[in-house]
Image (cartoon, rainbow, N blue to C red; front, side, top):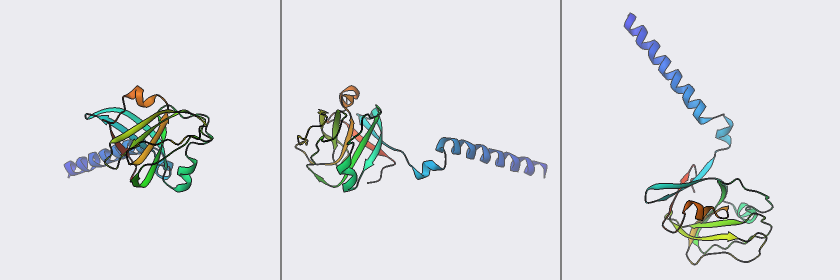
Length: 160
């Protein structure tokens, strides 16, 4: 009987400790209402970069993009999600931040990169290969982290 009580007490203690750790790692209840999204880049199985991203999945979100923003935290970005693989074109109208645009194919490989897009330019920006996703990050970061066409993207909490 005594052994069963000790076992029961230890089990309850273990469960409560685990739940307390889980709560602290998962954050506040508002995290469930405002999930955080990440894009990771790998080269030959090695993690080379992680960006916390905002999602632009609707036509309205994609049209607005990062327009009118004065800054973008260094390891943040905006992920544009499209329904189909295609040649997607962008411009920098009303965008004040110089950007790198990483075009990602449906097989999650980097299809191409347009580096250092000129702020406020109305020049059309695209690459010659189809893509399904485009990640906009601060200019210079794709080169800094070594992101290129040999890089693979992995989405965290993003289910397109």
